[in-house]
Every structure is written in structure tokens, then in C-alpha cells.
Image (tube, rainbow, N blue to C red; front, side, top):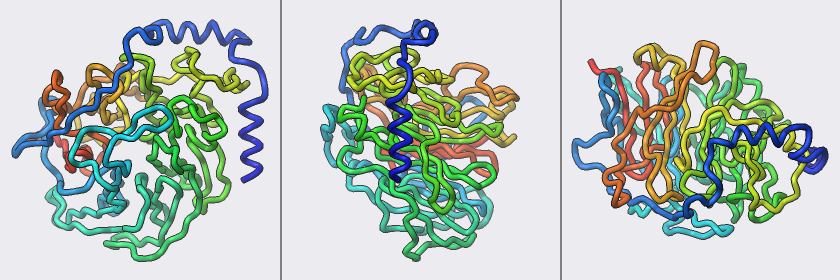
Length: 429
């Protein structure tokens, strides 16, 4: 661990400054289409979640149907589909029953009756008769600490809690885990833990694991040294050894997925600069890549950051796709089936949990980004699953989408954590 600390410190605080080697001009071009900082007042505008009435559903484009796949959860945040088809649901939340101010920023989510202590469990759903609906429901694993990302690899079931990665012996088809398991890696958490989710994914060959860890604060408000192993995607071996920073400068990376052997993530950018700053983004993730936080956003220097500018700024990588300011884009899934119409093949679905730092609500929907055959974005994001906003003027929303998953039959599952529902989007018959 001491060796890792030394490497990170050297990487951050050695080298040339951001303004040298022509980088300043390059990044001016990248930021020209953004408004100036504080062009509008920074707002705190939390949505009011009212839930769904009987028979109400979100709306998908013509040719699709939306059904209530399962409900009755306690904040269903994340989904994982096991190799045998079991659907695992991580039920967890921020553990705050009120809005809490941390590092000068109010965190929480919505004025919702669903804000309660984290359930800290994983529930299993199974479709035994092949009708596309779960008929078996079982508590799969408990005694967790804000679980989020899940993974089956070889004979292990992995869980990324907010403070550590654990693994448990696993056999395909088992309905629950009672084994104590083993902690294989500590993750940064503690009191300053504004972005508490920890996602986990394996490389295509199963030889490496990747963990997405968000920053503890908005712009390193408590000092960059307190952001150690944060705002990063970490890499480690399946046994927890070899932990290192794979990519850095990602303020709050959450959803991760692979396409064309390239890792992609969606990232929540910073707050406090106005309605249209700073756009969240979808980006490919390069090994040892640096994506700007906290010093740079979309090629522009954040003048609020007082930390010394490190040499790594010279290696700044522009994000690939802007998906809107304050949309809280969390879930990511590439469509790798053929059931949906051809325009959706190989493209990316992104669940946008929705804004709190914008005068007019943004996000609160699932969007789609088309990709070409070479695994590159081929257009801007477009609305796919909408209807979550009930009354824009009164900031009323039915729910808030978090995770998207493509099922073996080619349908799309979407978690709605504040309304405790999982939605299923299928091709209309």
C-alpha cells in the first residue's frame, strides 16, 4: 500500500503544468461551446417523488412495451444478471433520512418518503417457467454495508460495498449465501463520502477487476490528499492483490461496460457553477488516462480549485459524449442483443437519476447513444424511456432511474430506486 501511495503522489505532483506544451490552446477549443462559469445562479432544487399510480408506467418509443417487472423493494439501486439468468438486486441508499451538508454541499436526493436507512441486502429474482417474469424471490445476501456493484467470476460472488470489496464462495443456482465471505480489498469511505457507490466489473478475460470510486467532495474541498484512491477507476486481481489506479480524474464514475474490448463509463461532473455546468459524460477509459477532476472540466480550468496544479494535467483526455449538466447519469449498458430494432444494436443505454443542482430539473430518464460498428459514438444522446417527470413546474417526479441491464432475451431492465420498482422494456408483440 505504501508503494501505491508513493506512485500516486509522484504522478500527481511531478512534471509540467497544464498551461505548457500547447495544451492550453487545445483545451480552449474543447470548452468554447460551454457557457461561462456562474452564467446562471447555482440552485438547490430537489425533486419531490410522488410514485406511480396503478397502471402508470414510464414511456418508451413506439414499438416497445413497458411493464412492472418487480416491486416492493427498499431502494433497488443496482442489478446484476448471473450466468444462469438469476437477477440480483442490490438494495441500498445513502443512509440519510434527511439532507446532510458535507464539505459545503448538501447531499441526499429527493424529498421522498422512501429516504430511510439502507436495507444493505441483495435480493434474488428467478424466472423458473420462462414467461419473462420472476416467480421466485429470495433474500440472497445480507449483513452488507451499502452494497452496489456485483459480479460472478469463476466460483466466487463479488460485492462492492462502500468501504470494501468482498467475495463469497458461489455455485450457479444457489438461492442464498450464508458463508461469511472474505474481504479482499479496502476502499475509501469514512465521514467524507459524498459519492458512496462502488461499482465492479471484470475484464473480458476475467483476469482483472475494475472498481469505480467517486470523489469524497465536489472539487477536493477537503484537500487532494483526502481524495486518495477516489475519483478513480481502480484495477486489481480477482484475489484482491495488485490494487492500483487504472484511470484518474473521474469525479464520480458509476456505470461501466465493455464494447469492442474497450471499457466505458458514465461520470457525474461537478456542481456549483450554474445550470448548464458541468455536463456529465460518457467516455472510453484508457489505462493511465487522466480525465481532469478536480482541475479541469471539458477542457476548461476550474478556478475554484486551490490545490497546486500537477504535471498529470498535461495528459488530460477529453470525454467522448456530453450527456447533459446535472443529469446524474449512473447506469450504463451496451445493447449486445438483436431483439431491439437495428438502430439500437451496439449502442449505449444510460440511466439518468436526475438533478438537484439545477433550477429546472434535468435527467430523470433513460437515454440512448448510438455507436458504430467500430465501437465509437455515432451521434448525440436521445430520449428512450421518459415519463418519470410528473410536473416540471412543481418539481414532481414519479421516480428516478438508476441502473440499466440487458436481459438474455434482449429486453431492458431499469431500476427506479425511489419508487422501489424494476421496469422492463420489451419489443411489442
